[in-house]
Length: 508
Image 1 (cartoon, rainbow, N blue to C red):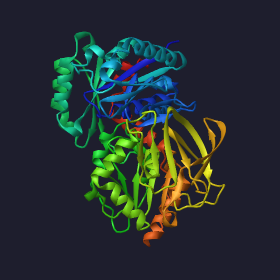
Image 2 (cartoon, one colour):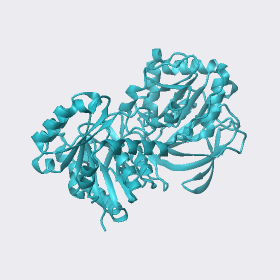
Image 3 (cartoon, rainbow, N blue to C red):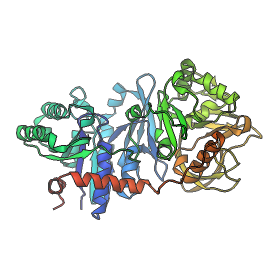
């Protein structure tokens, strides 16, 4: 039996499509259905590694987790990772195939359309229901001829469309009216319902606007979803970081400053820290925003050399080096770890035309880019005591994932915080990252998801608080991603018209 389908499209980017797909996946799972998410093409620097080593958008991994299944490349067959120079790395079925301009990418449309169709067919053959996510807006008239992710997929899947609008931005009714008016008649007929997202007021105030929409277009309103504060579910794109810049730490809080690189990737690494009591995480873009945080983090990036040069121009590199001289804590993750090393070499021009560039020289490592991209789920143990592991050598198993170009070599005699013992379920033996600086206060790791592991997160927070002379904080209240998926599903189900949803989704 071929799975039923429902598609979530939006009036614009970042209106909450990804979150609504996750909510519907959880709701359908709670009904006992085998449900899977699908997004034909995703453009994002937040990515994830599947159990077999394929790279997909982070949003689809989150949605799969909400559905209670392991993520696969079929859930996001095409991933675009933007690069400098108006180009993108094109990842097809979890593997990078080319670095292309917009024009060259769309020359691949016939082949990509075939890949999308095959992935969707496999998911529908092995599940009861597939919840599909669109991208941007289906009403982008300049892109309509090249569409392979919105109405093209709705037609391919025979899927009814729920159109989501973000009222928190303002103008949600204009968003809906403009979107429907710009759709072709056949595509307009696929829109089965509107859904208002991120509302912070009294829903009754929306009645005149809802009545107008339903009267003008004959399309019902499915519901009004409230703004859900501090939801511990990863956002899809970096637009979400705009709301996480202003707050400064209180006197009894730790302050962690994450440098928002131009090509920042996998910034959801820090979401677990944001939900810790007594921790304030800020994303900063300029030297005058840095202040005196307890920890500075250089995160992952899609373009290590370009972002390192940006840090130097912005004056941030000098401030990081000054912190190291004062023995103040610094952490680098993936590309940030590479930047903290002695040298970054790129003789093949994989990432940039610069053959080699000096790093910040704060860690005893050298990175050399090659054509192969490492994508792996990993398991590791603490290899040496450090402020960031806080554990004895050989203990404290952690899980995470690697997504990076290039190999990072540790200087002879230097030490790493972690030792990898498994990649994609196969035995491995490799040092990860490095420890440096006076007192070991500079550290780097190539593993994403470190702070999803309670031990290193708690150890680092405890060490930072002790260093400031602050009292220890209580352990987290047991909030997990699983409880957050349930909170999301409960909130969405409570505010949608269930009879309309069941009819649109064909649930009987």
